[in-house]
Length: 436
Image (cartoon, rainbow, N blue to C red; front, side):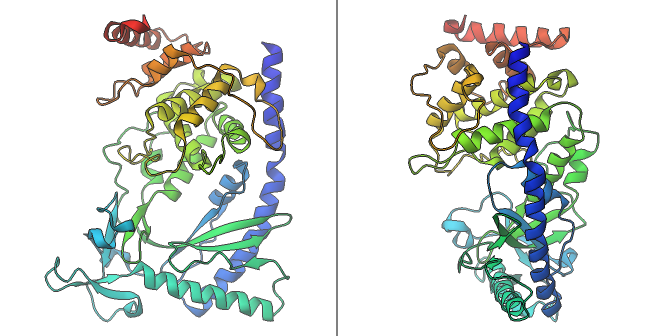
């Protein structure tokens, strides 16, 4: 057991040792970005610069791969006067029915300083049309200002050749991507205009409990609603910053929660990434799994050792892959896997291979991922993972405790919790005799 523990911690130690260098790289690139954004603000004061980038830096240091960094650029407008209206299907992404939290932002008062960002939309549906703040116009204006700021910096020798590339700026994109060179690597920043509404809380879709988190964490993380472009005409409610705030809150808790995320993200980058033209797991998916595991395993007893902590995330990830459904932590009815071009069956196979024999994978390598084709899935575990979840019976601590026991990492002494697990397991065995 001691040798096994040493292997887990040695692997983690290498991951953690890289974070300082990654943070320094981020900070240099961020300084260049802030210079550009300050010039944008000077030329158009309606675009504000948010200097509070500690959460983005925190996330970037955690992530093993060079994922894009989302940078929100607030708009200086009186958002309290804006009215939310349901988007029409023709204005939503891809022409599909309106999705979660998609809306128009109506500007009811004429004579504001937003006229160049306003269009009349929904003439038939809203009795003559309404004046709305249009994301497409805001993005186009911001894009022009960013290009102008880059040219200005180059002419004034504020940038070195190769510091910034705007080649990823796309005409129809809902974010503006810049490639900025840090101290040793290039970082992609996705700049997004955002409307912030101070007066209303983010809708938690029935979630009231702070279970697993310090009291008031959910309320504090979601006390401000953010709207970002969803299409040229529609906005959507963004959970980017609320999720980052909750991730930072997890870092304040005792135990190995964040170390578990670090370790699994390194495995994701090495072995669970893109393959055969299919996308792989992302850091964002693992963040969501960590938040769910924090809620579903609220006891400090769950997080005392690194191996056991990793398995708390693994059983939730395996469940989501098996039923092809990863619920958003703040919008549980939203399936984050929906529409993703992933081979979920193949990813399940890889993740369970690691769960069954982690020693084979706890090593750093370059090139091809570790082979899993000779490994055979356990039918009982697979049957447990694929149990239907219409009433939520199999999305609770007792159910995931059963899965932990399947992987022989269940060391909980709480008698009430052990009893709940035993009762649920008896119920499952009565309903599915082959699991007896």
